[in-house]
Image 1 (cartoon, each protein chain N blue to C red):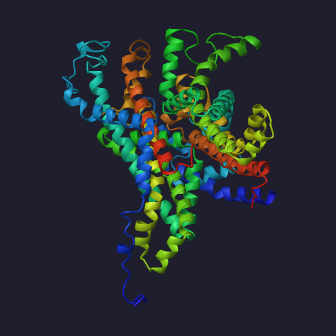
Image 2: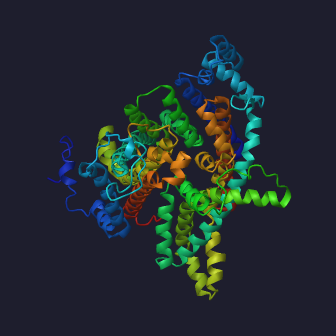
Length: 309
Length: 321
């Protein structure tokens, strides 16, 4: 009985069991681990996370405790990075600010991936008028200068008198809404070329549902692109947030972020005489972003060794 | 070709309209306007505020404001800046050239350094030079521009006092001729160095990647096999082809010559368009912001079209349709 019973659904799950197939993921993982910059990046990034999220528990100081008489002290044995104008320990504030900056960076990127991924795949997969509308919108946003729009939106947040704790969420969404275009275009073009390949024709022949085709067959092929671009996106989001907060239009006190701490440099005396207030957050941003860029770059090489930029 | 350009220009009209509508919608979200931002002024009565709103047309509903603004733009009138009490076009013209000077200097050094570093890194791949350059490149493009600017200002202006603290000319001076040029040049060093360092990293990576790509090609092996000098192989055969994709990059960078750098200009107190627009944002000077964003949007779209055209000219394998 060689003939396939047409009435019986094909058990493609069993046949396509990829357990033993040499997976692109394992290959990529091995290439990733061989990259010394990637390892360096992972080490720095892990340190920054521990520093921000676990570090404060080891600090003998309380951020809420204000003691102006101990204000503006230079670095010493007690206060490794000195104190700010309200007598708060700068090292502790740096850790707490790291929580905000890292969270915003990651959350904004998740929003970018969500919007960019969804719009990109809809445009690429369905085409037609949906594609036209989405790509037109992408063209418009791409042509507009990002930073001025970002700053304007930050200023409007202040006009709307959004309370400081909630501003963090608004900053995430603003960053997300401004930066989804690149990813959407990338995913759209990938899906357009994937759609033409034979395995997609096979899914058509098998009569799979659209949702299954997209989630099980298209998505895993686009995933490497998404991972690389999301990783580098976190770096971009952290930089944008820091610029916005530096101008006083992003995260505002009492919540600190690295960018906001840097805005101490706007005060001429703090800038010239008290570098311990604004150099550490700058170095923290730099280290984090370098680490993320190392990892993102290594991931790109790992997934696609031909493409080396 | 002509057909291609005309079609692209026509296609860009809806993009421009869309961009202006989005910016208008952003303003619609804000509860206040320029007049509200002036209400702290004790001389400002309700009556006067209403008068001012009528004068600036702020009392009208948004769609009507949009249409009156858009018809003004078509006649070449971008409205009046509320910050400067002058036509927006005049304000832009007053400040954009200061940004342009910075932009040209930055672009010159950026491309000069990036090409040297990128080509040398590619020719000597994995050498000590390449390793150090790669590391530096990563660090440079991971720096927030304003942080690098602040560090430069602190080290070279505050501590070492080699360069002035900011501005474009020494206050109170009235140098003319050569002395004026030297004075401006001294003020330019730090902002130009900051922005060049920030942007040089990414570009040198492109140079390196493109060169590596080309060097692997068969015709380079042929050139070497012919017994050509290595210098000829690199500069005449490899570089020319590696430069092709960079034409696009160069063209797309052209709008940034006029855009100014908001935060860096502010840090160095450089009287450019970026700093002025940033100040405008703080007082909700929307005609200025709108005029500026639209100008940059137009330049970006034009640069995109130009990039496609130039690429088609430079690479005959590409056909414009």
